[in-house]
Amino acid sequence: MSGRVASMWLFGPALLWGAAAIAGLCATIVDDTAWSTIDRTASVVVRSETCAGCHPVEHRSWRASYHRTMTQRAEGAAILAPFAGESLEYLGFRATMTRSERGAPHVRITRSDAAPALLDVDVVMTVGSHRYQQFLARIDRGGGPEDVWRLPVAWHLGEERWIHLNAAFLEPEGARGEEADYMRHFSRWNDNCVLCHNTAPRPGLGEDGRFNTEVGELGIACEACHGPASAHAERHSNPLRRLLAGVADAGASGDGSIAAPSRLSPALESAICGRCHGNRIAKDVGAVLREGDGFLPGTDLGASSRPIFAWSTLGDPPQAPFGERFWPDGTPRLSAYEYQGLLLSPCYADGAVGGLGCGECHTMHGEEPSMQVRQDRRGDAACRACHDDAAVPQGHGGHRGITCMDCHMPRTTYGLVDGMISHRITSPDPAAWIGRDDQPDACTLCHVDRSRVWAARSLRALKLSGSAIAAERAAEEESWASRALLDLYAGDPIQRALAAHAIAREAAPVSPSLRLSWLVDALEDEYPAIRIFALRGLRTLSERAGRDDLRGLLAAYDFLGEVDMRVAAVDAIRRAIGPGPLAAHPERVERLIAAQERQIVWIGE
Image 1 (cartoon, rainbow, N blue to C red):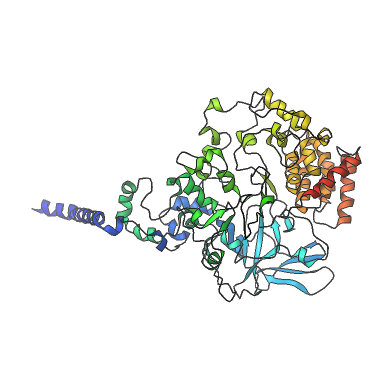
Image 2: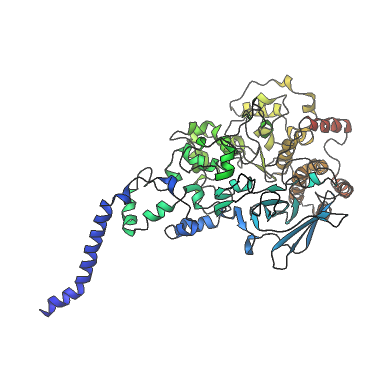
């Protein structure tokens, strides 16, 4: 008898708990609310800390990403600039960066020769943390007390210095003393930056022209990609529902309470990225400024907006104002158009199942926050996932450092003061571009000492496909210098920036010592961004060439400095390096530089 009592005390609670668990499981199975279809449009944002409870691994990888730090409150470690009394003189204005009495980062901008301040404000938020960081201040300029403005100065992480945003975007310098030129990128956050740099943004523009802007969460958080998760969190607050979910929700769409990008078609999955990585035209701009864009991840992006292409029109009668953002063949040449590049690629296959989507190469929860390329898609692995070895040439004529992307996704995109890969997948065909000077090609962006005629003949020698070679179409200038050098001297601003970037790349099969003299003239370019490319390239090449004697001379050159100071510094650099590639023919240089005027590019937002 005592043994039975002991057994009851020992096993009774376990039996009761087991019975209760079985009863709970049965109740959960028959509970319609645990399994019924959810109206996701009724869900609201619950923020990333809620997601962390059930998804700690994904939350940690997201915390380490630049998406999280896209917009932050200006406090603590979020602020990457010193704000310790630095000043930036530019175009006759002085920006001084300090701290307010309460320790907040502070920016004061005045004319260099006058006391009254154009701006004298505390920074309230930061934007970006990867290449450069921008700063926001609350200033009522007719939009009410919640009016927030992006300041015209930024902290460049690579240069470890303050820059003016005229140097971050691709556009001419501007006139000294002209306030409009200096304040060109002093722009409102509420109806611009907020829309792509935050989760569930609502600009909140009222009929009185005042803003009451709200965001679900600052930065690009979980629900920017998965959608508002209140219904998901409520459903899975039941631990028994979570226990059963592994089997019940294992299908293609999960339980439908949130969007799972990896389970979507290439079209729907890529649309989530395209919302911000593909500039768009809203169907109803007024509605966007009031309530946000209305896009729900996992649904058709085209229901609320259309991506901008070279041929996109606005107005009545229709006009196509976006041409300068694309190369003549329609390929995007600016960052923030990666989605358009994908849509134009044959691998995308119109978004059908089996086609290429963003998630084929990128992951938001990987180990490397920069570019967020999947570990198993680095280098040629990105292409070999779909193309077998027979379709992928080995070694590119003996070069072992060349990847598929060097040829099929060349660096023909400008963004964030850098040369970036194109997201339009194409095959190089330099023969088709002989005689053209309006677009770079993959072959001569690598072989920076060669012409397109040479590239076309080399492509044929490698038994790769391409157009028939018509060398007679080559212009006279193509006998003067390589294609990259012609672009550096005579190209439009984006060509010049990308040529400078290409000339400095380690992969270029030309000695660093020779390439040093190629970049010096670009230090005098009218566009500050191009001067940054040239200076950065000269630093890189001088290190590879072992030219320690150039270090001080390059340090004395300020790409935002006064013209006379820049000229003196360039003269000293030129004397140390030697004459440029066209120094013996100044008339050719003059003719090439005159060609720059054929297209003046102003690229801001």
